[in-house]
Image 1: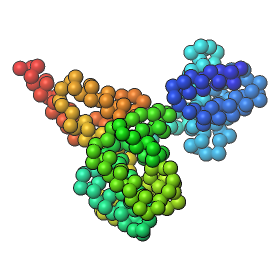
Image 2 (image 1 turned 60 degrees about the vertical axis):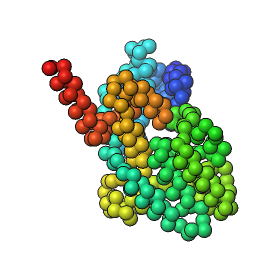
Image 3 (image 1 turned 180 degrees about the vertical axis):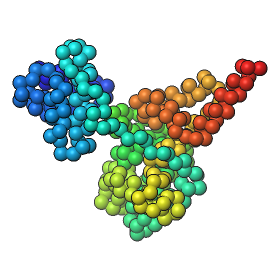
Image 4 (image 1 turned 90 degrees about the vertical axis):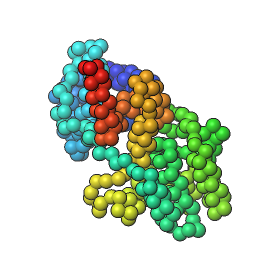
Length: 304
């Protein structure tokens, strides 16, 4: 009985574009555990017992959150299924780290420093140079950029085939960005770099995203943009955040224009919901200040 409901639950999430493989695995494990005791319905105590068999607190929390979400779904159709209270094994999501707005001259300095990452007769320094530049110019996720293939650069822009939730989209490119990518492809050909991935290392494949993060942070530290190991600071993902913030800053201060701009930016960034795009407003002090000033002016105008 539980597995039938799990199949329906998983199918629903996959119809929304989610892979949902890890969640399905956990739910099947829970069902096997519960049915071993003869359970035909979800029981809160059984959830607790199963989570307590986990190898760590983090695994227990993920198990609990996954089964609790499933139990809420199934209880809507049948109230006999129990739903445990939230947060019994701790909160699942950590707060997002404080974003850093990267200045244009800092981006240029990091890109220049990337050219010294490895020997000049290999493709790697050019790969990181142009990779960081593309992230800054387009706001792509690092996973999306590293998944690009050479034939994804088309006349109309870049085809992002492996976006979040499996979404595909086409992003337009500024002429300077296209010229830079064409220069990188020419450098690849000159150095004899092979492989179908757009960005490659000497092995002919894209670098792992962890490696890209490490290279970026190391360069940021060398340039004094980030503190020593163990301290927070500028991250690779801040290139995407900076792109979104600069885009919002350039938007006309008109309610209708902002609404259209936010919707377009949400699609461009590959967000599943425009609410994810609005997060950049609340996370960025300069935008919050602009919002506060605009609100005060509106209030004064209405009060006059």
